[in-house]
Length: 275
Image 1 (cartoon, rainbow, N blue to C red):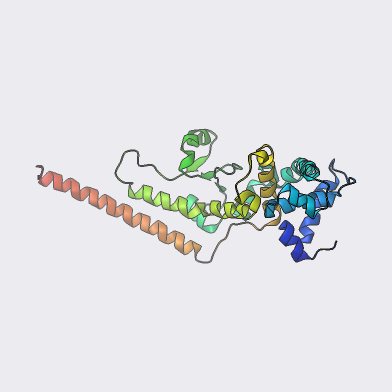
Image 2: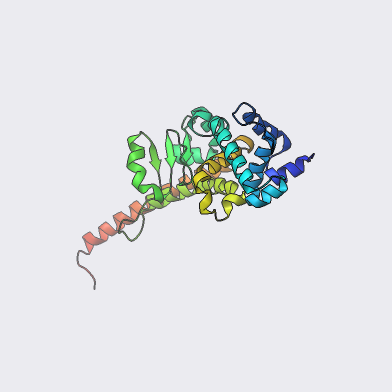
């Protein structure tokens, strides 16, 4: 059966060229052609299941396999093979250098707001879904508050939104810091959106899938890394927007100082409390 490039993308989320590239990682693995399916068919079964969220029974019908147990064995074999070579080559600490993070995955906006436009600082945004981090600046949300001291002990400069801690309101500096984090962390939702485009991960995942869920998520993230462009985007007006945010922070901080001095003078001139 010959499929067009569009049909490849509809069924597997990959182009024909990308599919063949991914299949090449399997040819050197322990997976072999069997009487029920070829190596390419085994890969196609997994790639159809992830984006379309198809059940084992439906996959058995589509690929003309005897039953869902045959499909399950095929999926297990492909997962193991991909986790052996494909995933380590395209995901995690060893697949990318620090300089590549700086050059290819750090936006102008993030660089200006987080490290005063320092060109040799890597900025890594992490979320509970994944923890593939490098050194330098780590931007996290409040859910990581209990892990801050651990990350700082590793020499990381951690940036996260502030906490009220029984106060009525944040200081101007804290409000601005929170805005900076929000401005940079949008990439988290962009990554999650790419992952959730696959129905298998967007829908409720059955308990029976939990034993291999980590492998499925790793394979999905690796496919995104390998075949999707970097999410980092830098627009022509990023520098101007960042400079405006920094300027507003400076003005508000000055206003806060003047207000504090004013109230101090009021207490000196009118030391009594008005009921």
